Image (cartoon, rainbow, N blue to C red; front, side, top):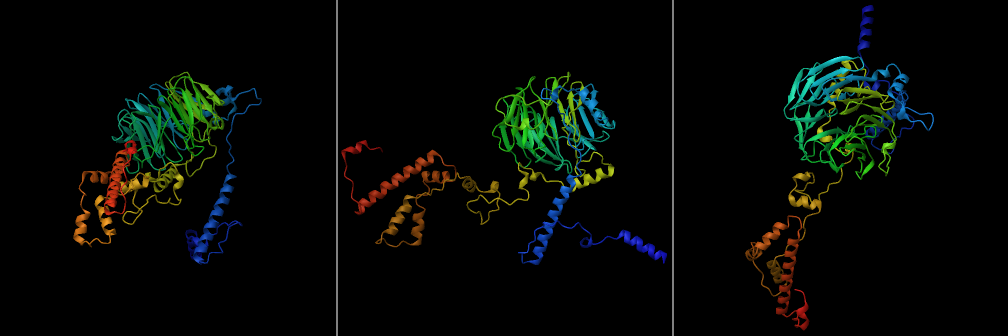
Length: 574
């Protein structure tokens, strides 16, 4: 009897209830009921969807109560005090012991250095111009890999997590694992200067001295897109985390926006009168604002929704500046021998004079040049790369205090990392979905622009339409019809009641008369092209000749009297 009870207990532990019988939270009271729908199946489905949406909204409101952490910020007691007068020593003394660990100085040889944090903000990768590469956990001080590549290295980035990282070396892009073992040599990426990784699409993007922007899928290894910018070497690259659009800054002052499914720039603006040296997109506003800096020493903030001009611009000392937005919308500008931090809403408020916004924090760095600035995710830390290594300073209030463990978890273990990687592969977004407006997914399809159907269908892409149809869609097609002189003769002969009926052979023969004339061939060719003044003049001339011929025929038949000549005819224009 005891054995049977134990077996039943084991079965009860390993048996789950059906999904329909599992206890669920009751739906809220304000759920709409679709009583007007007569179909029982459809009404049940709509009621279930409405209950699910209301329950999800209530759970989101409950989850907001758990976000107890708030972003700190420096505040002054009187109006005469300024936050930028507070130095790093005072901030470290006022901060907690755990937060004070973020203030550090790394003195390294082989600079200038560039840095990159992982998505969860736990791991840091650094690269020196002379070939020194290192990845480590900056909180515990655990070194993952350290390499001396003995060649020029220009940039570094993590891939989907800290397990792999890519280095833009002198000739190609190389991918290494966590232990520093070389895994791949990407020969398609020639002389790369900047790297970016799109985490939701698993795309590694690079731009180099040859002016080519290339996307490579790291899950399959295939080149997804390869765009020729036609603007020379590019040394500035940034991504919009909201829609995965890449922003490129070129040496002629032009900023271009690229997607892998369009062979030309989606947006192209003249941002500066000199080379663009700094570029960053604000992640806190959904990618609405973009900051650029040029060699002319001007920093500009743009509104990516209309591109009708700068929201704010000001001049800096020391030439080009390195830019970086934080998760809370703070803008860091590294120029000359100092790093300045500006906060919202002053940098996003339209301001006519070219005056700098109110300064939030500044920190002098004597080691020039300043080559990179990076905010640590979920921390109030700013890392600056310079000629003598790296410097990390504390900037209160710039980091996001609450993290989503489903997206980036700073405390994830090995098992959680594996599950997140598999889930990311299953949820990978196709490159064709990258667009300036990501809200088009799930929306209604816009009405077709085709004025006429081709083969009784409207589903043909615009690029595959015939030339005349494309011109008609763009409104550039010439819809005027040509009327031959012989056709007019046929029409006049049909209108004449006394004319003899013509046979079918005579009509066909008469219809083709005059089709081989050079003027008619030219007009038929021009009819499929854009309207130009030459074609218009020839049509006007033919229309005048037909009118004269019609008048002469009417006078000959007696239906119209001939106009008597006058002495004023000499003044008429031909």
